[in-house]
Each structure stands twice: as structure tokens, then as C-alpha cells.
Amino acid sequence: MTEYKLRFKYIFYFILSLFVVLFFRVVYLTYFNENIINLKANKFVQRGTIYDRRGIELAISRESATVGIDPSNIYDPELTAQELGPVLGIPTNKLIETIRDKQNYFLLKREIELSKAEKIKALSLPGVRVEKEYKRIYPQGSLAASLLGFTGYDDDKALSGLEMLYNLELLSTPDAESSKGNNVHLTIDSIIQYRLEKSLQKAFLQTASKRGIGMIMDTETGKILAMASFPNFDPNHFQDFPVESHTNWSIRHVYEPGSTMKIFIALMLLNEGKILPGERFHCPGYIEIGKTVIRCTDNHGHVNLDEILQYSCNVGIIKAAQKIDEATYYRYLDSFKFGKRTNFSIHEAKGYLPPQNKWNKSTPYFLSIGQGVSVTPIQLITAAAAVVNGGILFEPSVVSQITNSYGELVHEFSTKSELIGIKPGAALKTLNAMGKAVSQGTGKKAYLENYFIAGKTGTSQKAKAGEGYQAGLFTASFLGFFPADKPKYVGLIVFDEPGGEAHTGGGIAAPVFREVVESIIPIVERSEKALVYRLQNQKNKIFKVDPKQMPDMTGLTASEVIQVLKQLKVKYTLDGSGFVKSQDPKPNTSITPNITVKIILEP
Image (cartoon, rainbow, N blue to C red):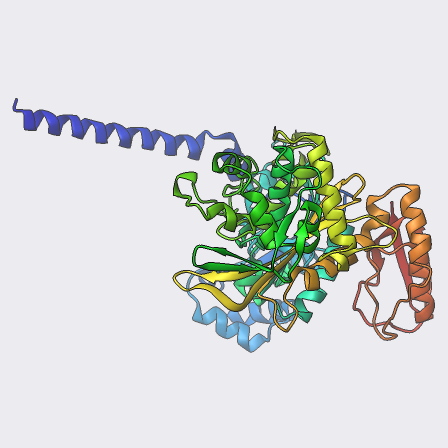
């Protein structure tokens, strides 16, 4: 046998073995895989429910029915149409025409009420088939829509978001007797989510931004309490909204972080002991890097590290960063996972950190002001949490557990983390400097008189491939921590390409952060501090209502609800204590005479 024939024989058998392996793999997945078998054995599994951390339903499935027609089994189209048409609200003549025009089986009408389905079944019409199906409903409307995603008309076909990511879990049943899939429990707090979306949407519209993004994370666990993107959509009618609005920009938007990057450079300098007591850096208002001139908003004179963050001084941070060698600089940024995904989702985009072997002399200077590096909001907020929590870099999470239809625990998700070596003193000094940035510096529009907030503003010009930075195109952001004396939460507000004169992080993102924090203090602070704050700051709160339309009272306290309903001059009942979980009638419905509003509150 020649060498050529021998080689051909080996290649042939290798390819044949690959086909055999693939064949048996397909057979296994089709006929023996337990999860697939469960789904095939019960085509009409009711999709499981998605809950928030309070047990509020965010996505549910309700039984409905589909009416199908097999024209070949219909012997009297006129009689069929006369009986069926009135029940379904279809004109008899139109239905007769439809039946005669079709030859094969077709779906006549979907998602009909069960009472109508029973009437049609009772008619026992030849060629008319009534089948059970489930309709996916999102009872909170657009709340957390870009995170949740949605299903198609068939609720077993997930199209985006958590619905797609946890599709198999939501359709998996505990046993053959159960027809309901597992439930997914989120770390999202619907009240915090609602208040974040409310403030973010208002500013998104006012600033005519291309995108608005907001997030709140627990720094001690990496759990996401709220995640919002605008433009938004209603998953109950997803087809009526542009595809752009379906995207979760918290994990997909990639941008240069601008001056929020100074937080990490300051921490690095302090952690490495490179800043001497009383050390200052001269800022004449600009600095030349090669042929590039980097400017500050002002001539800041001689500034220390606190003042560099307070005034967001570009020259100061660039000069300070020169005290760190490239290897150390890169090691820190790499340990915070810049340029990497956080493993939050398979749909997550990735930012960019230039490899160290591609650096030149000026690279660390530009990185210090957040240029030449890109992030996603989820990556930046994850890294920021590690700055204040003792150097623990958590993988961000939004799902806490899976339960089955009997309420039994199927799986509980544990937090994954790794340690970054951060000295407590360095973290505290960085935090104090960010506190001054809010109380006295560029972030002063995030300041609350009786509640401590620390943070950093960010304003970055947008660049286009091959064209460089674009005049008039900006990303405005604010990265904040609260309460600043011992940060439990970190939040991020981002506006992409804001319109109008205001385009800075301090001008448009910081006020939104302030408004959100102020509104959720009673929720996140179960302490005397929260009570004192409410007494000092909410005694003059005024609610404006439309006398003809029911307002949305989600998240209000009992006293606030009473204040609203007294203005409407309607009867009401309150059940429970804490904050409004649900109301009847629903928000934005017309107020009718003699109406009684029912309010349910939960802690």
C-alpha cells in the first residue's frame, strides 16, 4: 500500500469516527437526556414564575387556549361559521371564506379565554380543535424588562434576557405528575428597581440621551438590586417596540470610563505607598503628552490626592501616576478585571484594556484619565465594589435560587469571589477623597445633607474608529457609594450621548444618583438613621395627582398613600405595613365615581 493510500485510509476512518460520535451524541440528546425527555414528554408545561427578592411576580404564565381548524374534516362551513363565529367575535361571512380558502390545518385564533374554549368544546364541531396553551404575562409591565427579556407567542420559546438564559430551568418539572416548571428567584428589589427607573427615565428624556443606564449593587455580596436601561419596552407587547429597546445596555454598552477611572489610580497609589504625607502635584491647567495636550477644567495649582479626586484634576492624576511602574500599573487594572467579562451573562460584552506589551510611554497617562480603556457598566460597578469592601471582587449575580412547583429548593446559587490585595487604610483614604468629591467637588449635585454619599463623576468624549474623538459626543456618568461611612451599596448612572448644553457626569448623572438614593433610604436602611432622615427631609413632601387618573403608588409608605388619596377624595383600604406592593385599580386607569382603592403594603 502506497503512502498516499495509507494516509487517505487514516483520514477516512478519522472522519467516519467523528460522524459516529456525533450520531450517538444526537441520539443521546434526543432520547436519553433527562431534561430533554421531560420537555418532550410534557409539551404543555406551564412555564415557571420569575420572582423578585420580595416574592413579587415579575413573569407568570396563565393558561389560555388556541382554536385550530382542519378544513378537510369540515363538511358544512356555513354551520361551523355560524356556531363558532359569535363565540370568537369573528364575522360569519369572513369565517366561511377563511375555511373555504384553506386546505391544511391552521390556527384560527390564539390566547382565547378558557370560558370561550369550554363553549367551543361543548359545540363538538367536526374539524374544530381546541388546544391548551400558556400565555406569558409580565404583571409589572416594563419594570426590569431588558433584564427579564421575553418569550414569543409560545411561552416555551424564550427570545431574550433571563427568560432565555434560564429557559431550561423554567420549563423543567420536578416529576411526571407536575405540569409547572421551576421558579427563578432574583436578587432584584422591585421597589428599588421602580425608583431607579423612574428617576433614570425622567433624566433620559430631559437630556435627550441615546441611552440611559442605571445599576445598584450590594458591595458585600455582588448581588444586583436594580438594573435599568433606556430606551425601555413592555415585554407584554415587545413587538411594538424597536429592537434597540430590547437590549440590556447594563451588560452590552461599552464606553470609556473617563474620570471614574481616577478612583482606581488613587487607590493603587495609596496601596503601594507612593503618596507621601502632604505631597502635592502642580496643575497649570494643562499637560503635554508628546504632541497631545490634555487640559483640566481649571488651573488647579498645587493639589494633593484628595483634591485631585475632588476637582477631577487630569494633570494631577497623570503626574501622580508617573510614580507607578508599568508592570504594577497593569497588574492592578488586570486584577480588577478591566478588559474582561464578569461572567454575569453569556450575552455580556467585553471592555478593552491594552495588553502590557502594546503599551508605550504615554499609555498609563491616558489610562489614568479613562482614555484608551473601555468598560461595560456591569464590569465597572463590580470593580468599584471591591474598592470599598476589603478588596473582594465578586462575580455579580442576579439569581439567588431555583425552586420547583412544590416550593422545594432545587438550587441555591453561591457567591463567587477572589481577593485583591487592598490595604484598609488605602481604601479608607480613597473613600474619604470621594466623599469630598461629593460634598465639595464635581459631584456636589449628588450631595445629601443628612446622609453621606461618596463618589466620582465621569465625563468622556466618544471616539469613532479611524476618526478619533468626536466633538460634541460625550458619555456622562456618576459612580457612587452609600452610606459613605461604611458603604453597603454601590450605584452607577450613565448617559450616552446626552443632548443639550449639559453633558457632564456632575451635571446630569450625579443628580439622578442623589434622587435615587434619597428615595430608597427607607428601604435599604432598617435603622434609626433612616427614620431620622425621613423625619428631617419628608415632612414638606408634596404629591401632585391627576384627579381623573389613578396614580402609581408603588413603593410609597402608608402616610404618603393617604396623602395622595385624600387629594383624590376617594375611599380606600390599607392592608399591611411598610411600602406599597400592589394597588387596585391599577396605575393610569380612569377614576370612576364611588371607587374604593385597595392598597397592599409589605415591609
